[in-house]
Length: 171
Image (cartoon, rainbow, N blue to C red):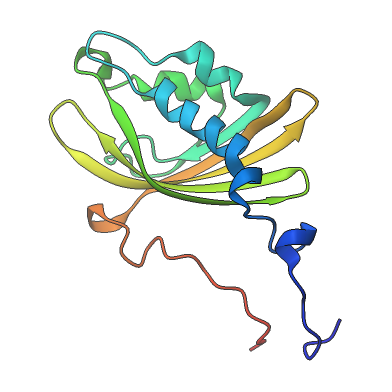
């Protein structure tokens, strides 16, 4: 295909842009929603680690800034994440992650879901962040293979979370 030829509807073909049909995305969004539910917990409790782990592939990777005060993004497996998530004694006051907006696409057996969410801490602080989920279709169904995440500047999405637009214009 040359630049002058129309690309057609790649989303319906599962092509370069991927499918973003809400019905096709529903199973992926359900898994992502379950992850937020499992990681949120009331004071004196802990995350539902059994449910959380069941949503992931065995060798999942998480690359994220666990807390706003972290100087760098950490690359972890699920065991390391579990230890990191509770390091600031959140069990005393509870913790919640609340999805604000999300978008996604499917390319064959790969699903990508972007979620802007708020981290709600026991002291009342609310910090906005962005999670990028990569899910894969396995023999057991859709599972999370990785999450990349970081805080959004200034506590809101602003331009820092604006999606990049693909174009045919080469520099």
